[in-house]
Image (cartoon, rainbow, N blue to C red):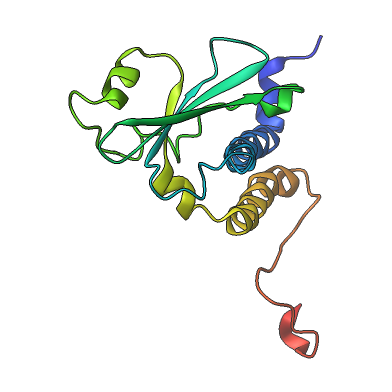
Length: 169
């Protein structure tokens, strides 16, 4: 019988890398799915409520302005499991400390406690390419201790390659 603790210890970096990738995929999915709407380019929209709990086959989106007034809605259909809009803390109004106007439509929606709210300022500031590069490095660094502990890696260099430098090895 295999001891699951020893497996978890041996593959700690693998598990960390998998978690890092999941988080990246969630962030990327939010921007990719919202690009299917006009919400991302409409600067009047300050927040979008994501109702991902009412139906399994669709996500209801409701846009709000900076004062918390409801502007309009949209529906994204989920044809595959990878299209679900999970909470991305980097964009969530709670985690980004987005102000919600007391007594507003947005506050009433938040108080119902279903789904989550995207801070559109945070989402618009998101750079998918930079995030992919950062995630790629983080995944590599997560795997590295496992590889070094097993003797599969002995060292590494980060930065641009300089093939003309004899001391680069």
